[in-house]
Structures are given as structure tokens and as C-alpha cells.
Image (cartoon, rainbow, N blue to C red; front, side, top):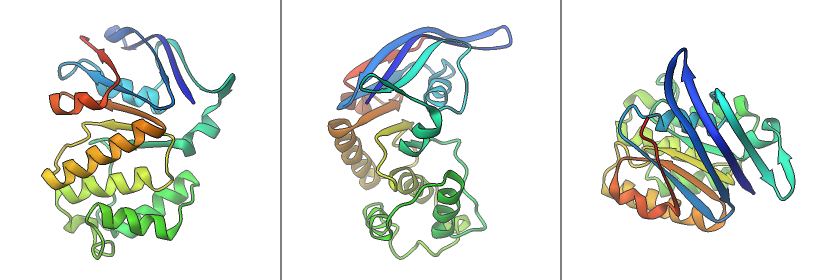
Length: 204
């Protein structure tokens, strides 16, 4: 599996967000996207997961010599970001079930229960999300992102709202992902940088 990006650029109207972003990321490697607030880190993450189209450049996902189309790529993507919304009037378990149906993905009950335990949500999965703290909501986003064992994991502000125990768990996940699959993180936290084999500094 490989992500290939050549001269990516994004504009909103006449406003330039970034341009000339190029990289190759191969299986077993990780990418850290750096830059000041407003430089376009989140926009690039959203482009990489297909939520936003680039204004210019080439972005392809490849499996060997074969280009993977978005229809087959989506089930292999996991995304965690502060802009992802959870349904407060549903329980954590209902949120997971709902988003799985929307994305047409399946995950074993045992694997989901293991993730709930790992992220300290076991026993709270039937609570309404509106009763969750910001840290618990962030951990629930990780459960959803990881429930299909994604080959490509994209993390925007990966340790946002987490206590030290939660941060340690996320770092374990990041290390596991970068060893076996593809990991992309967008961050301003220097502690995250050691998990990126390749660094891109977006200046905007």
C-alpha cells in the first residue's frame, strides 16, 4: 500500500491554503504534517481521506502497481479529528453501530469490546454520549476509527483532550500502526513528531 501525492494545492476561491505538497508514503511508514494554526494541516488531512478535493495536483492510493479507487479505499481508512461529530442523544454503542452502517463496514463484537476496554470505555458503552467528557468522546472516536483494523490511519491533533493515560494509549496505537500499515498525523505537539518517519512543514 502506498500514498502518492504530487504538487497538491488547495484554494478556497482566490485564497491559497497551500500548494506544492509532494510525498510518497509506503506501507510501514508514517507521515507527520506540521505547521502553524491556519496553515492547512486539517485541510490536507481531509483531502487525504477524500472529504475535500484538492484544487490541483495528483493524489493516488496504490496497492503495488494497482491504483485503488475511493469506493474500495474508504473501508480501509480510519480517521480521528476534532471536527468529527458524535450523536449526543445516542449511546456510545449506538453511535458505533450507526456509523458502521453508514460506512457499510463490519467489525467483530469481540474486537469492538477489546477496543472499548483499551480506551477505558468498557462499562460505559451504553451511556449516552452527552454524558461523556471531552476525553471520553475522543477515545470513542478512536474506537470507531480502529474497529475495522484500517490499513491507513489519519489522526488530526491525535492527543487532543486526552489525559496522560489516554495519550499513552494513542502513542501505542500510533507505534503499532506505523510498523504494520500507514499512519498520517497532523500536529503541533513536538512529542508527536517522533512517530513521523517523514515530516512535511506546511507554511500556508
